[in-house]
Length: 242
Image 1 (cartoon, rainbow, N blue to C red):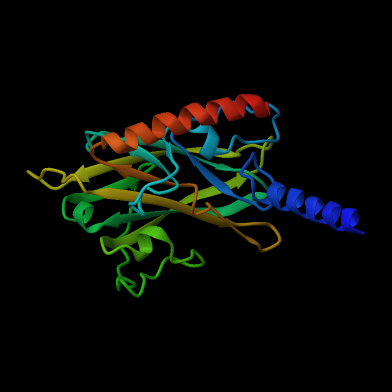
Image 2 (image 1 turned 90 degrees about the vertical axis):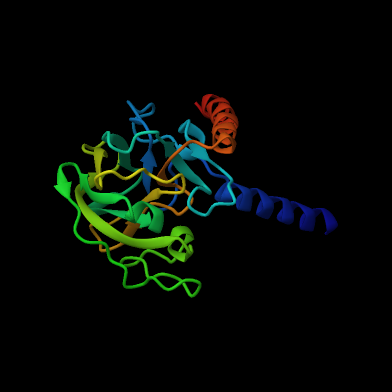
């Protein structure tokens, strides 16, 4: 009897570990951000998990804007930069990119273009920390939305994405930022990216809050060290999985 109980407990623990261990796209639908093109898939039906694949992924930070997120540091906000969004499973119809900025960024930004389209005005209706800022639609009030420095968000239409190997399963997003005349970007200015869409059966699909993306300036040494260590471990784990 004791052995039977131990066997049952062991099976349960294995099942829990399998469900909670981050890996390639399995389970529910997800939209994943990348700092670079996720490339040709092998096997073609799977996308690499950014947590293990992306060299700019930061696993742990006391800053909620940077924690469990891809962080793109840059010394020049006046040059367009590129991010990638991909559908890890199912489909994402009418996909929208959600761009949030903190107060420091709002003070110096004139406007932002996403793939050549000007963003509309910032929605600041939910700006009420510490009670929590109201995020768009069904996105939970996570991380940046609860931050004291949160200013507001805007949305940009991306279109339809489909799971690999269907096309298009990924989209290249070009972000162009125009600064106000004569300003200097403060070191604490940040822009945050989420995404969401809908499946054919009416379900909701979004980028997990542990797999969003941020654009910051400048690159803190602590972020660089974290990225380097995570990238090394991620590359090793990814090669082992393949």
